[in-house]
Amino acid sequence: MISIVVLVSLLACSHGAIPLSMRPSTDGRIVGGEPADITNFPYQVSMQLAPYGHWCGGSIISPDFVLLAAHCVSGKAMNNLSIRVGSSTKEKGGSVHSVAQVIIHPQYYNRDYDVALIKVSQPFVYSDSVQPISLTSVAPATGTPVIVSGWGDLSSGGGSPTQLQQVQVNIIDFNECNSDYQLYGGITRRMICAGVPQGGKDSCQGDSGGPLVSEGKQVGIVSWGLECALKGYPGVYADVAVLKDWVLSQTGIASY
Image (tube, rainbow, N blue to C red; front, side, top):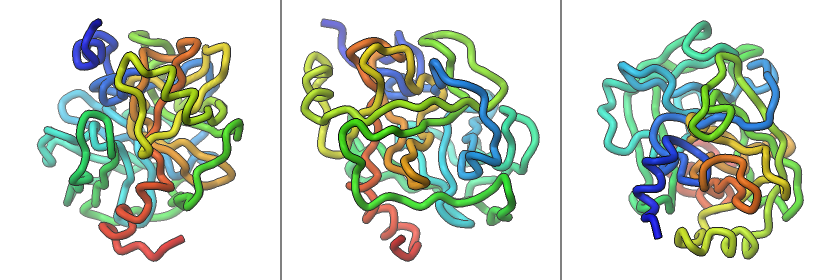
């Protein structure tokens, strides 16, 4: 059996079945989606890593903080990171903010507790294209339609788009997803899964760290998966409902 670490490196980067983080490294993408405008996803950010450019997605949760995946920032020098907001186009437009602080969940390990925070040096200025998103307190039920967005690859190991992408998938039953990934260690209670039975729609490398949203609230963070959009292997996301208390405790944001 190929180890997950090796598999992740082979798959390239970001969400897909291998942890986006496992997916690895650089970014995640949207597979089977369509172009999106930032005014419809004003919470979406691009986390950039010098000298590579776009590396991961993320979401604005306050004027000072971005929520994203721990694997996106683990081992990265803070002065090489920046956050671009307010643009539909990868690596162009909007405003770019330097990073003042990176906070990784202390229990992050091997894809579990895959959540982190970035505090920016200069607060975001809200507008039609720059807005925070609320965090859910209750995980959505199995079958609930959810939307994931980002600039990740359009297929596993494929090219990435310049225009922001979005795709609708559905929440997958926890036990079903855990069974799907038994050969890769299964999933934990800090994870939720989303996809479609036939495959073909998913987040991917480069989408890592980005938001999974239901009814205007963030329910997940793009984390990992086996390649991207494979039938029988839904995308795996950090469960925001489970991790929300930690996020609030670190940011000082009032519960919402």
